[in-house]
Length: 140
Image 1 (spheres, helix red, strand yellow):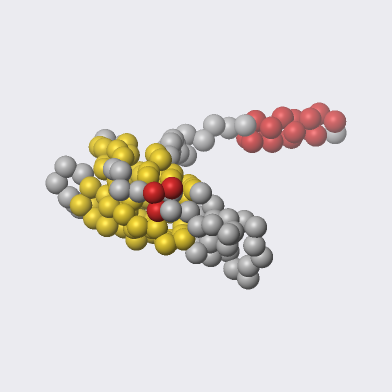
Image 2 (cartoon, helix red, strand yellow):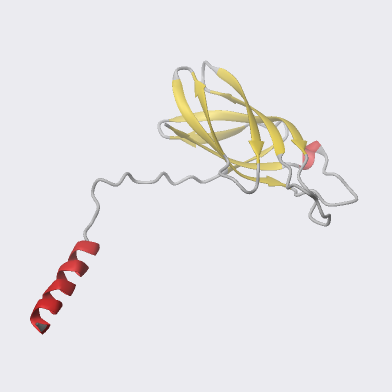
């Protein structure tokens, strides 16, 4: 009986440690920092895209206030490659997955926004030039 239990435990351990070859590798997304109206190059698999922050409408709850909802930051980003350009409207919410798909020149991409800084604080509001946006883009 002890041998059977020991053999069963060894089989379970071997199965749980089995290498998964069919799992797709996750892309290493290093966010690129954007500032207002200064284009930055974002590296994607196989190509570079030029990304520019055009607009920010920040309605997030200030860190030193009590609010009913968290709010969001609405961004307009201009994304282009060598021959195509598209404006992407993005709504950044701190509590959800901050990804959005878009198409540029027949290729589909996924835009991820990791941060929108500075976070609002009463009594002052950040100027548009103060915003820094962390973005990464990958091909679908």
